[in-house]
Length: 373
Image (cartoon, rainbow, N blue to C red):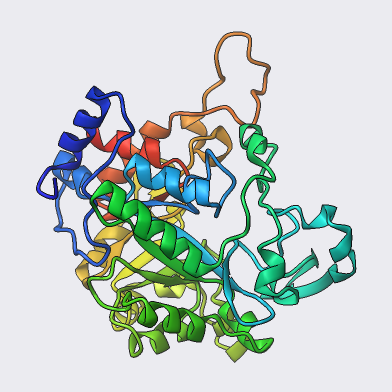
């Protein structure tokens, strides 16, 4: 099975009428530079927060669905609890992604916090113990765009990092292939400032589970820089430098009075610096594609030994370039509902033309199908 191509495995799964399952490559593997169909087959597909286009994000159902489709790994955002545990949540504020607002026993936990210069009103993971958080149930974060996901609201609990790793171990054993994980350290500067740094708990967990080695199917990611530099000396698994859109800056740069922005990280000099501690860059997709036209970023990164894994690819019209948006089937209102799918395959085709080695996708089924055209 491990020697079969993604194309071969998917064809077999489709013929059997089952879920697509691929022989996922190790997360730390370095894809060769290539173009055309061969490059497509080597693209490393990451289920962004699991299968978040189809289930509420960061739930057991989301992760397992993505794995059974055949993604190579899942993306897991990590925030700290009051007692120093790590939970899989997109942001420290959980009012939009859990049922906490409906729980009267937690009404007095509502507060306002400033995170990376932005004010948030709601409920925050750092005000709850792990035991309290696991009583909450996940809800769809963007119900206006993904109303079909709301049928699953309230079904799945908030997960601790160890629970996610247990799930991936189980599914990997069932599938006979490794399903990797890309843990993201969320808001490192913020968590450190409130006395709940994410990195020590992450390193301890990976070491305890033997997942801190180069062959552990783990890639640690962050939008900040100093924490990745520090992690370089603590773990053997690859690191991925996330790169936000134009105009934004890493929070640790801002806190230190460093005037550089993410734009500086993708200059030739910036990429050379990133390559001293990271194996991958994870830029916003607009940095790789100008509409549907590839930029030079992938080639620039490869020139200094970096691999590129852009985020985030989604099927809905609102996330696609204007030329790839679709009106919907006959009888669809104008404008069509936010849930209407556009030409996602067209965007993936443009992406592969850039030569990327990886991709973050909310719709892993589509990302995988696009590899076997």
